[in-house]
Length: 326
Ligand code: UFG
Image (cartoon, rainbow, N blue to C red; front, side, top):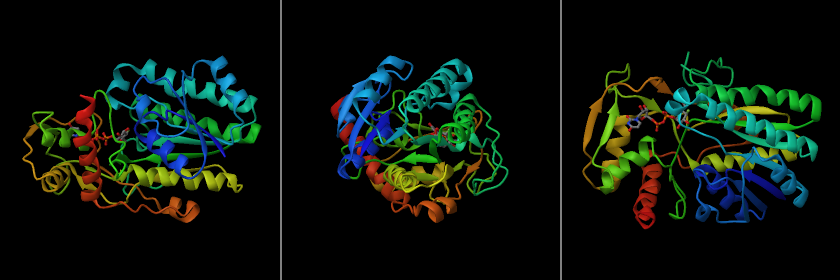
């Protein structure tokens, strides 16, 4: 099977490329390396290019007969999206439409799209299932939601089948320490906490301890990156077996607070972690937890690496390895 992985040099994409290679797929990564890393592509070919470059995409689709496209390439920082929305609409929307256009031209019918819990906005109830209203509150969430909305039209008109996977908090790393989270700048809680543990960072700042949660800090649903990749693999089988276009929420269904994450990191690493407290970060809901019943029922997906200590342990192995990139 020939699979195009857009954004295959990034955090989740690189884990996916490795998994697809291990399953015997012929993988081609297309990545502009704006935030990804060439040395994270551990399987198949890496083609450096931008999704805005239609001739480059046509060349690629001409060269390989792709059976499916997985699209991880996007800008992902909620805060930045508020100040620089044009980048988000250009990259996450216009460039994705470009990719879809070339898929239509080359009659590639299977599309797996990385979406996000941010398409829901402020939760009206938790856990969040697929029926929850989608009212994104920032350009990042809106950019992903726009693509979710156009895909049914591509299905209707061109027979393109798609699965949108809405990640909650992607976390963890390849258990062997070969891959992990390498964002620059890093904004995500677990890698930042572990940088404070390793001494690469002085401390971790907790954004708000006055939320309506048991310990006052925000609750999130941390889902291991390997479990996320497994969901993509199952989605691919589902589409190849004639499944209809669907959207799925992906999480553990269990929430952990910021303070619980820090305590777990202290226990896993055995290191002291200096904690400071600051005001709430704009746009952070108190609690985001997924209901993944549909992914289980329809894709047969079940997360396995659900223990927070395991997620943090794998991220810690990676953090200790990353000194080699400094
Ligand atoms: N946090 C801190 N200090 C930090 C970093 C984060 O206290 O230095 C807190 C945040 O306030 C939040 C929690 O840790 O309560 C998790 O924050 P992350 O930035 O790790 O993740 P988010 O929940 O903000 O974002 C994730 C994805 C986004 C997606 C969003 C959906 O990374 O892509 O969920 O709402 F948009």
